[in-house]
Image 1: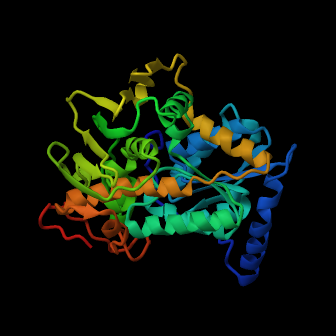
Image 2 (image 1 turned 180 degrees about the vertical axis):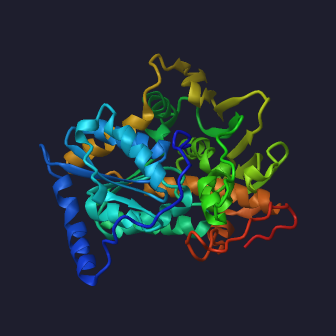
Image 3 (image 1 turned 90 degrees about the vertical axis):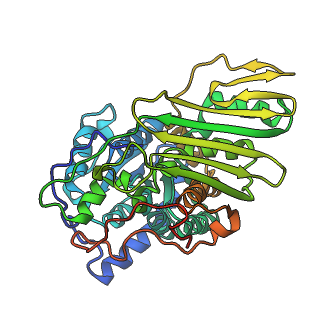
Length: 432
């Protein structure tokens, strides 16, 4: 999801306060964090302190939805790499429908690469909505500190990141911590009803799936005078694979997740893919592709055909069609044809809200939702397809999961000397 409503005219600043400046402060923060989860499990009117990391449009929206979901929630802390985006989000929230439960003074506003640490110390539930590159690190820190998490999709940009998320999710289960995913279609009412019928055998055994997401693309941010390379790439993060995972990961993950859901969240045996960069070729578009097409082969003979593009002036479509042994399903149209025809007669629900409603309702009951495994595996579907397209190689799932390729710079600093990535060339770009 984009954060196109956020202005970009300011330069980054250091964190507003260095709350880990001394070992004593660090110990106190750790003690508070480990005990913070307990009150959230209680029923009644206990206040749930919510903090947001990543103040773009999607993060700001998630904060509103968290406050709508439970009258006992309070937004108490904000963090972003850039102060201007934080302040824009803060202003919006202070004038929103939930403004009476927004309590974010200056001392609980944090900026810079380590800003997430302040929010973790202040909150019971942490909303993670930064560019995807940061999700594994932030999720691990939240779980280590004993905090419940809402994690926007996707949750990583490379295989080491996926492995980290899987490990954090396993640890969260042991610690009785919620990890709720931003793969919001799994909470949408019409799709839940459709999936219930598919799971009951309405179309027999799924044999093949076609997933398509064709659109004209999203925002682009031009380079401004005096920007360092790090700031420019962070501002224009969508167009750099180390930050976004390429658009097949950042957006198409929704449709890949729907396919995974239909197939019982089993992982494919292998993937082969193609892609390239035809119309979105200017410097402002970084080094990502503008089209992909991938095929996923499964052990039971099922096959997923998946294509996505960002090219303006073309016909657009977003759909997932499932062909079964006894019928077919227009998954996003909520319609089944064949021996057991059916069509959802309700209207599409606000799935971004429903995922938060489910999270806080469960917490109030003392129950824990953990979407960690499927959000990691669905993210990996996009990553394996991107790696196959970039390299021109057919990859097994295990090969991709074992990849040692770590995207991103060795040092996160505004003046870091980071390279401008080359555009991947199939048959030349190596698989690592």
